[in-house]
Length: 363
Ligand SMILES: Cc1cc2nc3c(=O)[nH]c(=O)nc-3n(C[C@H](O)[C@H](O)[C@H](O)COP(=O)(O)O)c2cc1C
Image 1 (cartoon, rainbow, N blue to C red):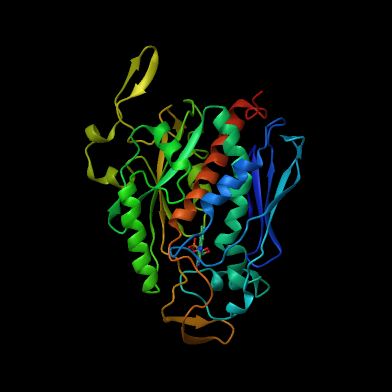
Image 2: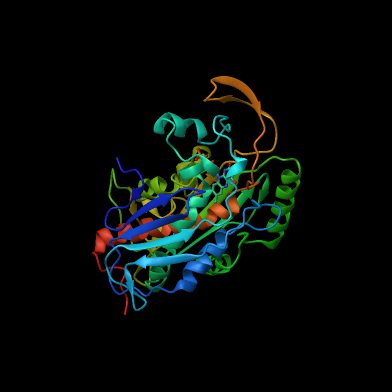
């Protein structure tokens, strides 16, 4: 079982803790010759950056260094390691023993026998996802040069809904520069004010993200144990606070007839086109050439500022505990950057498996 490494031909290994000196990631299997533009990395980190009342007050500059695998602005083909400084930790806010309900304090204690760095959630902190975002920005930019784009929006939050993708490529372009990623501006306003009201109450919110990826040729993926859905879900479930991933119509498949669920297809100028995309671009585990489309359910932030029943696993007693420290009242808009990153990585891996080690290289 892999622990902190994901991928087959193109792997990502993650390391670091919330309050350690650095977090970081190693990408191995990247084709040589890929242009690495630090502006792409900076942009991806900016999309994950907390801001305003709807985010944690922990503000990090996310200063990063690429310490290997790039020479003269191009990948060398050997492991690319990127590290990011942690500069704004306040470890005194964290007590060891009280288990935050819904967080990983108790499970980490059971797995690591008390040797875990618990400060700020340690290795389980959302902070560690900055390293995923930074490393995968290189992959996402390389995919774009191959005509493959990835984008995610907040599909729903409370009962506020954004519209779905209409013109996939235009919508993905629109989302690229939106730190609060909705396709409709009025959805952003309503979602933001719901989140602000919730933050005032010391509580938190979850929501649903929807991701699309365009330009993936038909025929990628494996039929049973290496399905495109399975590989993407594996990656997306590694994002802290993700509790569900569904493809295409997802849970709505349960409520429609086959005649409504299936995607009718025909030839148009020699190309196969689909009238709908209810299957999210995957049939039998293999891409069908339509955009890949899936939803990610993100739970409300577990650290809330209300007293809650829990345990102190050091003292072995029941307690009523109120969390201290700085926390995101909602995670979803920031998790979007991580979902984009891991989608790009997984697709690049699947494409590299199918087309060879140099797939991501373009002149
Ligand atoms: C970008 C991001 C930021 C997060 N910020 C917080 C936070 O401020 N406070 C918190 O309790 N959890 C936060 N989380 C979620 C926890 O890390 C997560 O719920 C916890 O590790 C338990 O994992 P699970 O929810 O997947 O079971 C964040 C997650 C992400 C992706």
